[in-house]
Length: 366
Ligand SMILES: O=C(O)CCC(=O)c1ccccc1C(=O)O
Ligand SMILES: [Mg+2]
Image (cartoon, rainbow, N blue to C red; front, side, top):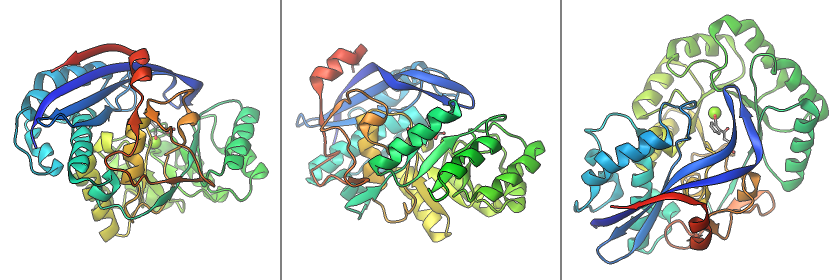
């Protein structure tokens, strides 16, 4: 396969509800959607999940746009490929910029699956026909969070993740536990704490949380290992894990017992599958993270989460969790609290071109 054309779209969509994390609040979402085309005119779709602000990682929409246009797309175009797992080597001379790389690599995976006449899930080695999914509750006044949890439970979500930050942590979680003693519950700190907060973090052990996600800074492998040693609650790493190598460091040091895999953060689906396989070998649980993404990345996540070691429900909610309307047809829906893994070829969804046009604020053909 040879990529002859790449079409880039910067889109902007308003979230149905503002989404607050420990480091900031998202109200609207720009994304880079990209379409790659081969010599036969077939196209594959990918999404760069970087945000407009460098809060979650250092990448932004603008840095990704630059890296894609000036380095990655020229490195990919016209190269003869037999498999998408060859794409990371073409990008190896470009340091990091994982979300930009993953957007393009994901589009090649979709195209490859279509050429083979199989689903993306199948191409990645996925075996599940449906996946259990969880939902994330942003930081808000407590009564509103309780209402949201009740509503999402009604919709069948199998796991509830609550964002926490200093001052909105222990007491808030105790109140949630009082109302919902049995729900599978976890907390995501997005690096809001340091090892100095160890006493507070140890109190969370009373709350029967499935895990605490990324309590400390992204580079703090050693401090996470010390913290995990002192905590009963499993630590899950998100922002710390940019590669298989990071997963090896974390697992070897004992920095976590669970890994959140996001294709964007680790540079693509190829690296995601490698991390999945490594964690499976080492008895480290994995689940698929979310990035408030459009349906393209959401469809990719569904395919990825169909691999058999994704044993914990991921942050793969229905399209309507964040969007009034999604860019894929049909939108992602829950069926009895689960999401069906599409059997159709490629991503298994169509692109809603009319809506794509409507939300596009900039585009380019390369
Ligand atoms: O996609 C979602 O619904 C929310 C996923 C989420 O928690 C998140 C969203 C944006 C940035 C970081 C994170 C995170 O997992 O830390
Ligand atoms: Mg997280």
